Structure formats: structure tokens, C-alpha cells
Image 1: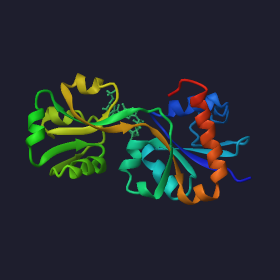
Image 2 (image 1 turned 90 degrees about the vertical axis):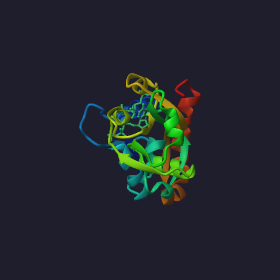
Image 3 (image 1 turned 180 degrees about the vertical axis):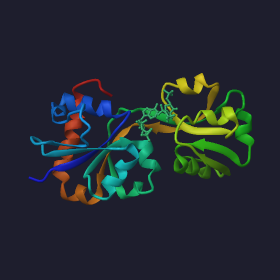
Length: 216
Ligand SMILES: Nc1ncnc2c1ncn2[C@@H]1O[C@H](COP(=O)(O)OP(=O)(O)OP(=O)(O)O)[C@@H](O)[C@H]1O
Ligand SMILES: O=P(O)(O)OC[C@H]1O[C@H](OP(=O)(O)OP(=O)(O)O)[C@H](O)[C@@H]1O
């Protein structure tokens, strides 16, 4: 039997993925202490590959992976988003997209033209302001985005907010929430068609870990 390949996003959501696999007794196939990037579950015929979050959609879209597990934010930011099917909301990795800026400066945000927006997510930020008909300049950063308004690089940021601690610790406030984010299972379109039963079985397995516990 051919294995199904699942691309797992390394980093923040990894821990929750392993908790689910552990609940299914499927984690034993993955050596988390090793530097290996590919593992095989011989019992369930699954190959796991460990990739950067921003590369998960690429592996799935190209058909190298049948399935991928990655945050909704990363899916929406990818130019090939529409080329993959989003099948299942895993319910972990929860956070939200927000617009934030310096405390007490919200008025400027609402009225300003050519707002300078610092973000790791230029596609999502552009789409949001476009839908509102507001002209903006994007400043693409790769992290520590909250610094933008503090040092005068930008007027606002578009970023993920979970606990709100980073925003607060840096004297910023949320001006507006965009939408909620969580980890999703995505599928290659062709593979979904040809491996429907196998893929459905894997989704049912993940689903059973939610029903059997309070992971959500
Ligand atoms: N507070 C949070 N901040 C950022 N991401 C979060 C948060 N809470 C949950 N997530 C989820 O975790 C994912 C980010 O994981 P991580 O920070 O490891 O990767 P990354 O920053 O996108 O990648 P890298 O830093 O390697 O380029 C997001 O895609 C999102 O789905
Ligand atoms: O609301 P909070 O719980 O504080 O979480 C939000 C922060 O977490 C993420 O940053 P991350 O830790 O991934 O670091 P980064 O700045 O390198 O992206 C995100 O970009 C926020 O800065």
C-alpha cells in the first residue's frame, strides 16, 4: 500500500500536533530528538515530513505531500492558497489577526490616508485594507513587528495576537480585530480525489482525539 505523506509545520503548532498523535499512539513513529526531517508510520502507512510553516502549502500544492498541517494565517498568506483544499479545523494554535498601534492614537488610524502598515503578512494586510477602500503602504517585516509604531517605522501593525501580552508590553493597543486563526488540515486536490477514503480516515482519527478529550 502506498503511504500518504503529511507535511507538518515545524514550530509553534508542532507540540499540539504531537499531542494529538500521542493520543492516537501514532507519535511513536516520530523521533522528536532527532534532526531527521522524514519519518514513516509503518502501521498506518503515513510518511511525515517536517517543513517550515510557510513551505507547507508549497509541498501540498506540488503534490509532494498529500496533506499538510499548518496555521490558517500561513494558508491565507500563500499565493497558491486556492490550489489546495482546506479540509479540517484542528482547533488548536488559536489566535487572531488584529490591527494595532500606539495606545491613544486610534483616531489617526481611522482617518489617515496612506497609512504605513508593518506586517509579516503583506497579502492579508493588503486584502483587508483593500476591502475597506483604504490606501496603505506596506512595510514587510519578518518578526518583532510591534516595534514598528514605537520607533516610527509604521503607523500601525497587522499581526497575530494570542494573549495580548506582546501588544501590552510594548505600549500598543488593538484597534480592530480582523478574523480568527487556528491550525488546519489541507489537501492536494488530485490526491484528495484519488485517496479520498485514506484521507477521510486520517481526518476521522484526528477528529476522534477531539471527541475523546478536551484538546479543543
Ligand atoms: N501568538 C502566536 N503568534 C504567532 N503564531 C501563533 C500564535 N499562536 C498560535 N500561532 C500559530 O503558530 C504559527 C506560527 O508558528 P511559528 O511562530 O513557529 O512560525 P513562523 O513564525 O511562521 O515561522 P518562522 O519564524 O520559522 O518563519 C502560526 O501560523 C499560527 O497558526
Ligand atoms: O499575543 P501574544 O500571546 O503576545 O502573541 C503574539 C505575538 O506572538 C507572535 O510573535 P512570535 O513570538 O512568533 O515572534 P516574532 O516577533 O518573531 O514573529 C506574534 O507575531 C506576536 O508578536
